[in-house]
Length: 388
Image (cartoon, rainbow, N blue to C red; front, top):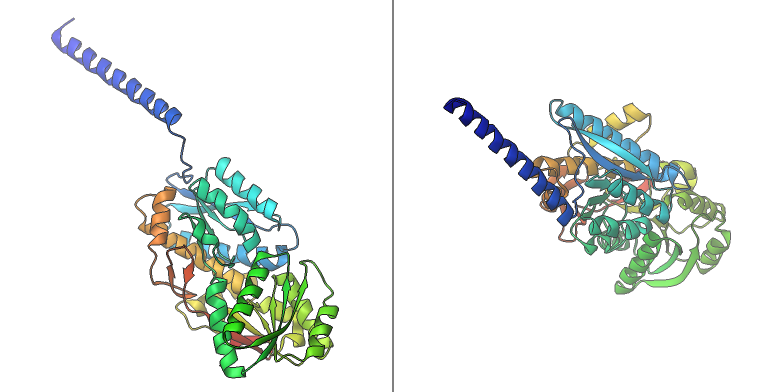
């Protein structure tokens, strides 16, 4: 064998040995160190898990608007950068239950290997699902859950809805100053975390302002008859009635209150245009504390309302708006991240500051909860407008 052939053979042998050695080291490192879930990535797609109540009692009120908000944002983001990696959803059914949301999170993390999950919908579901994301160091962002303290469990979990401890003090300050109420009644769903957390906050803030809570009535999610509770409230003649519950019960409460002839204004947290339409004339004069409304003059909001209405044949509600904003916030974080692994996306999300959204200038606080301006709206002529 001549010198050139021997040298070529030796070089090839060394390269093969190095490749085999590196492959073995890689396999060993995978055995020693547990695999970190990574965003499903090709040159064309970034997979994002989505947990929605596709079945069960929350389907109409939560799933449809959230899904449509995500869809509109997804199309905008992908069309804006056709030559870049495209977002792709892997959607799981949270079944409108805590157990369903937990199951969906586990499937997305352990079977689909996503690094980001959008959802779940309610605070009760979020309370149990967020710890799973945190334990596995997977980013989770709920567009709609709002009970106090749920994001404080760790640095991988975030929320886009304004939380109870931000929204209610601001709303009470605005409404009590203008209406001057001194005697209040409260009504809430005792089975739901968002509702119990909301009622507790209302009572705390009212007490601090010297407003007397003359009665508190309870019901359970899924109930349809509120006449006994509302009749007891009516006999005490409060100045105002605070309602804390999820979407399915809101129209029924307003309609039954109207049928009884209750004249005190209802203050119903996060009342949506869909619920106003369902309640009809009974919703007139109802007040709500929210983070968004069609009447809000924020950057891009008018275009969002027009585009959503044109695409889906209806105006967006709060849930649709927050879902839409959530995906744009995530897209901004991914664009700023050093890579698309969960840790990099988490770090980029934590550093979102004064980002322009349809909700207004948006930031995350140190707990991973949303920071932007709260709004107070009132139903006038069947429309939610600014309370002024």
